[in-house]
Structure formats: structure tokens, C-alpha cells
Image (tube, rainbow, N blue to C red; front, top):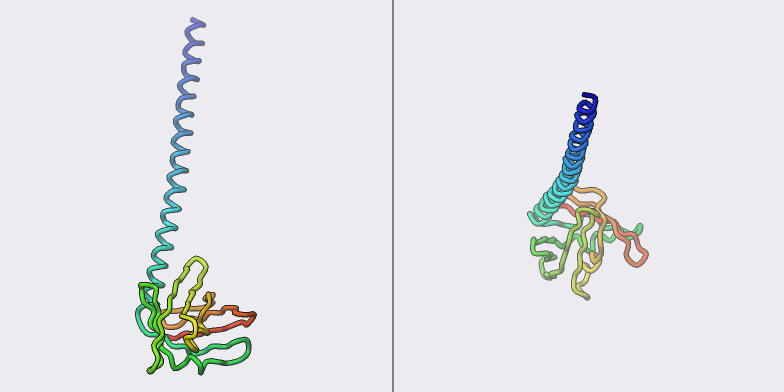
Length: 159
């Protein structure tokens, strides 16, 4: 009888070990599933933010309301232009007599907008830079950049 109890005890311990192994696998699966889900959610949120930024920039016409190059106000060199950002990555600057088409991109993660116009495009070449957005809303963007050791501060407003 003593042998029977010992075997039952060994069998019970062996069964408990199987349960522990099964629980470990289940816990690992839950952790892995949670990690994958969190990455998927983060990517979805970033895509929604990117879409919203694109929607804000491409709906409406923008105008420079302030441009400071270091401490020099050069707003008047650009204030006659209106800018239409398009979802295909192009931007058109028009001042009534001259229309210049360039490119633009946005990076939500780094909160930047990069604009580039063809060489010798006049005043709009002042906007050729990667701009770090410091403040924004649906009707304005405030950003700064450093070009040729000049600190530039820009405010665009939606017309």
C-alpha cells in the first residue's frame, strides 16, 4: 500500500508539471500577443496622425504671416505668396504673377515638414528646408529651421 501512495504522489507531481508547462506556454503566448497588438496599435495611431496632418495641410491655402531670419524680419518677401499643399507631395506657391511648384513631405514622428522648390525660384527658395514644428493647429503652423547657420522662424496661416 505504501508503494501505491508513492506512485500516486509521483503521478500527481508529474501532472502538475504538465500544467505548469502549459501555463508557461499560455503566458508566453499572451505576452507575445500583447506585444504584437501594441505595435499594431501604435502603427495604426501613427497612420491616423499622418492622414490627419495631410488632410489639414491639403485642405485650404496657406500664407506666410511671419518669417524671421535670425532677428531680421523678411516676411514681406514671402507674404504675397499663397501656398497650396497637395496630397501628391507637391506644393504650389503663387503671388499673382508667378507660380512655382515644389515638393513637400511631412514626418509626424519627428514633427517636421520638408519643402523644396527648384533653384532660382526667387523668394520661395527661403522655404527650402526641413522645418521643425513647434506649434500648430488646423489653421496655423509655427516652425523653425537652421539654414546656413541662420535660425529661421516661420508662421503659416490658413487663408
